[in-house]
Image (cartoon, rainbow, N blue to C red):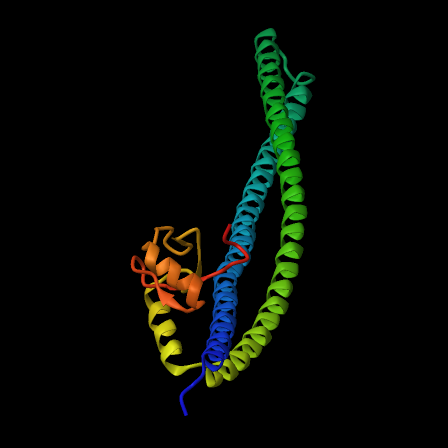
Length: 249
């Protein structure tokens, strides 16, 4: 028994609905894949910042220890100079000639000058140490903030990946069911086009212009689309095209 026009229209409507539903699933699947590829980049950036700051903090602590050692070394020298100064002052009571007295005075003056220089160096090192300790404290606070941010982002990422995995599973189940219902020739045609095209395969034609490649189609084909309400191929990009009366002026 030959198929009636009404039967063909119903079959076309079903296939049209099914192929658009499949394309909608595939579009969402592509979005999920892009999100899966982009999401880890933020975590890697935070981890890199955390590691870089950690290495900087290690260097700062090493510099701080070096400064403290230098200060202690100068303080040790200063103690020796002060001890010599004390001994030189004691000599003044023991000298017997003016020449010796003048020599001891010169020695005392030299030691006082050396003491002043050593004390100035110690003060400078103490100031450097104070600045370094402040920088270490600031970096430690920053590191704690980055660590918390990284851990929060990692948890959010894990939670989001689980959500996407569940959505993908649901989409795959929906797609499998739709593929069992649609015309196999149309599905094969759609699948082959998806391999070569980066964006949507099934697109509308508005004012005789394919919305996939944005090039015009022949007037006769456009009239056929309007009259037959059929699925055809764009002569320019081979996409599956249809007439959408809701969008066409």
